[in-house]
Image 1 (spheres, helix red, strand yellow):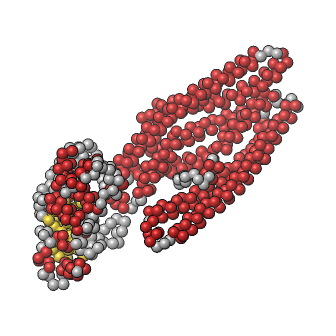
Image 2 (tube, rainbow, N blue to C red; image 1 turned 45 degrees about the vertical axis):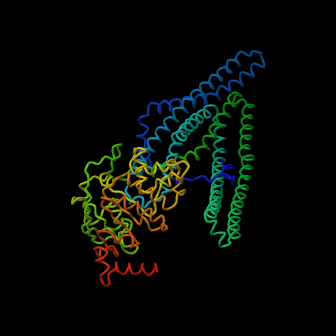
Length: 608
């Protein structure tokens, strides 16, 4: 194990944090035992066959001792029948042990796979329902680790660690009892020597693993350098930093080699210890035991059985350290998984009929003295008694400098967050009068940075209406000015867009997002800087698609480029979370010292 981990060409293993074995950590583990309950019959049978196979293996040393004793007698009288009889017993015992092991492995794997599959489903189901505030305070990598690494650790424990713990416990108990019965003198001799050697071996093993982890961490750092360099290769070449990046990588690799060589020295020392210490102890036990045989204080057959049982006991004692470490890792993983399962989720409909609207909204939207701060930053108010209305079918633009709270209003409309003060009304009813699913089913957003999933164009458009027909998807694409460029691809609507839609241009992604929103057919539409980062031609095509999308819908338009919102029915001007101006473009542009007028003039100057 240590040799494998010290090989610097191996991929770095993720070292999961451990948890202390305590009452609380055991309670968390007990929480997950309910997932084993439906499979308790096969789990119980797996345990039964584990015990049977272990006892079968532990019976072998006794028979081996008998075989040696019988063989000694057979040399004298020439009768081999007893040897054949013991040989048959040994082969039968091995056959039973093999069959027991097969069913133990089969049922433990089945129980672990089905158990962890159920946990994964519940964890993901709860994770996807958690509020936006949770994701704002969590790292995606950490959440992914909980679903992958932590649950894999739990699965390994059900399949292997638990079985090994029970097996080694039985071996240790039976082995100690057996060697004590066979010879108290030899047992006392072993207890004076073996535990010390095992403790030294455990110490060496831990230190070698520590150095191995350091080497793997350094190797991961060097891989990060390669990844960053290749991702930013244009910058590297533009600043002629090839030599700098090469030196940075070489220095990192040299540190990996240095750590690997340090580990090799300790590994070599460990081999010396094993050769001289452990095997020396075995020779010492053999010599001492041979002396006892010569003195007639122990028979040869018992001595052979003793040696075999002692080997089992030593192996079990040495394996407990690794098993304990695995149990601690599993308890840590269990703790994190249980925490995720205990997080309160949003009250969204998780049934197949979740897109069915129970309480339709006509489109009237109103903010009444809404104040809000993000729970992670309670000392920073983002919205301060914001009030405005958008009648059904109206186009309302929200403008203001960066950090004014425009995007936060978007989150409030979608009910990503609840305001600390005030309320949001839909058709003159408070948001609480509608289910969260109903509101989000009737609101759609076209953001500035469109996120497309890594499937086909067809799948990405259909995300707006799960189960949409090909004709519906095509009609939505035509209305979004997307059909022509889609058909220019060899695979048409089956074209794969790549991760996050990287194979499409910004304008193409925007039109896919608009087609998706058209397919959803929302009552309230949010356009969040939908054309701010496009070239003139793409902006024209996207703007035409947006005009089609906004027909007969309440539209909330977030914009920095004020030229795109002059035709809005109402413009709401925000500054530092407060509404300081409201009106049409013509009304606001005439206000002396008005913020909207100042922003318009500023953009006009920058364009000139």
